[in-house]
Length: 299
Image 1 (cartoon, rainbow, N blue to C red):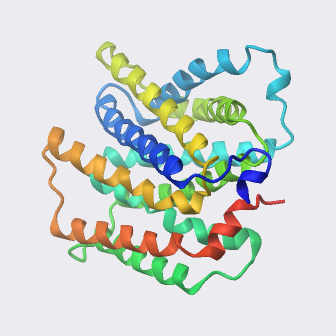
Image 2 (tube, helix red, strand yellow; image 1 turned 30 degrees about the horizontal axis):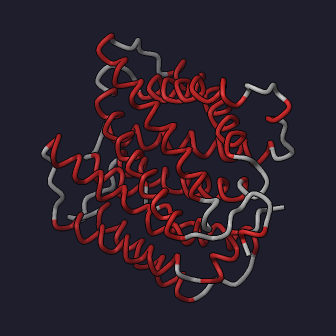
Image 3 (cartoon, one colour; image 1 turned 60 degrees about the vertical axis):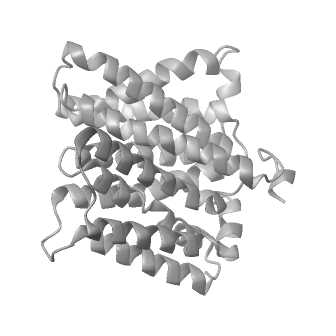
């Protein structure tokens, strides 16, 4: 059982679900705060500020007993997680500047549809038929959101969809890291590496932060820190594939925020797309084969 392995607790799906839902409420706040903060600086600077604020919050706690507790034999996996996570956040932040917040979030958080397929690519074990059917249904929903009237896909939509692929890898790597790495070490390496990776992005997209933007940026960083912490703890209670459906709570939270604060009401096509993506995701993550694959970290 997962709870018998190093780094895991005895499986508790209810606790994992509650923590995952709380984490993705924080993610919805990150998207909304990024949309507001984007008025005061560029996407690259926004990404750097978010990661640097989180690093400043985590580093004193992580290093309070010196550097020894932060030593790791899984630096490559930390690097993969940071690279895909940083790229996924940049893609989402960029998409938010071009398309409605709810649409950008829906496309980005089609990530759980990819998670069983990533597990298959790593382990080469057979994927259950339900997984393929669920993924197909979900991807039909993505297509519906991307091309509701048959128009070409916009740059913002492409960015959000690319973010989904990257986010799926990042989320699977969190589960793999959780097998051997303590929570604080995972957070420390993520924010350290993502901050370093954000520097050249910000330098290429440099724009000074206007004074009114700082409170929003600080709130953004704290929401991001909270989301990462809650996700890592959640994956210690249950496998990533079993918690996948609860990730979709971010779509509901974001749609409500987008409606309440920006008066963006989803179209019928978007509602149908949401239903297909969520329904497909629920089918996909129920496959026992995929859930078993997610527990085993890559070699």
